[in-house]
Figure 1 (tube, rainbow, N blue to C red):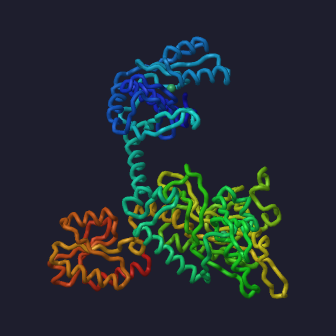
Figure 2: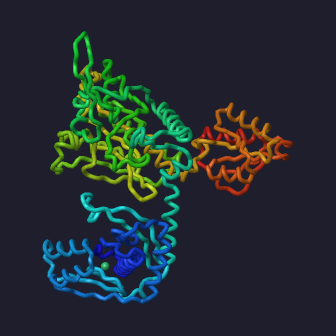
Figure 3: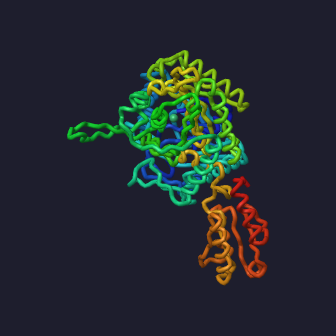
Length: 602
Ligand SMILES: [Zn+2]
Ligand SMILES: [Zn+2]
């Protein structure tokens, strides 16, 4: 089977021909293996097998060696078109059950009259091509085996699991090397890999899938982000509240989360509650969102226009059902803590509040040096046939609120794109989109304008004319959830966090034990100033300790020897820099405290 001809037909022929070369090499190494499909893909090709004996990535050098030998042999690719009957008997002789199944489908379901085959050297494949004329056309050294994975025959989980071997392939060796290097460099930043290496979080199946345990180092990241957001929110006029994780299921029917959001929620827990001697069946749910709780805080006392805008903020823990197959690292989890807040306001306050939210985003992103993101305005889709299940049915309110958000976005001067059909069920939203190291697009945070839920829950305030009005609600979460935002930050910084955010801000390394007292004094002084400082008291050499600190990506390592003790100085080595700088202890402390206080990036 051949993939659609790629934009570059020559490269496509090379990749697809290499798939045949791979299959030939694998059959050579594992005689009796059966063939699945072997198409060209975006960055190379793959081939699926039922192997007579397993292969692993350790076998890659051997497979590559055999492939190179095949390429060198100048095998010609020869095509043969056979009638269906002849094709069936040829496949019979090949003894390839999956090719046979596919041939029948081509003839019976797709109505093909002829089926084509390609031979190169001893290898025969049922295939529609196209291929290179000879393996001579395949550029030497411009391919590399990438990985091995399980794949169901024809992508259907009811079918047998095959072994898929992936490879990269390009037109030149240089292109291939550059691509492989960029890929492996990106993978070094993967948050799952760094999360483990830097002891940030762990997932224990005893606790459950998608329920990360934050280790001390990762907890520092959470708390620093939280502290910063609380400062921004304090300055932005937000008030903090605290609310419970579980709630009567009934509430979610009132808000409309049920049934709109049913698939994202864990099933309710039911139990008997006794009140005034009477037994009642109660149903409680883990909350998927904090909004209803904040709405009810708004409603807890009579509100007047003088209270607006009322901004209620909470780092709130929520639980959402994710399919176990989708759960992954910190990006797809089932329990998450959200930088949540709800702004209750009158219609004429929406624009100003929305701009304030955008400004907070910008401040946060500037502090973290985040530039590679874009914003997306998601609107409802009036033509969506399932629209009534997905959105609150109020076309006028949709049009009006979308116009308001669009106008505010235009005023903010921040670039954005617009997509239909991605809105929240209760109103339009602005998403901040970014890409993971593996190229997948993800949403870092969301801001929504809600016209639907406040009236459903009966939220009101009295305006200046003593008339009852329903407030609008802006849902906003600039730092998203800790889980997702920190996954993003780990990859953004490649694990080398700026000093203010780093789990260890200063590591002291002494040339010999006899300088430990001096080193410890520096650590104690820094810790008295709330700096996360520590001393490496291990028995390794100084050089080794410096390498360990670099491996742990500690931003500031202090080296203490005879000279430093005599002069009352330290020698500073910053992460990623070769040169060192010696300075008085007090000068270092002042510089460091300033770095932390101003959240300096570099
Ligand atoms: Zn082919
Ligand atoms: Zn909300």
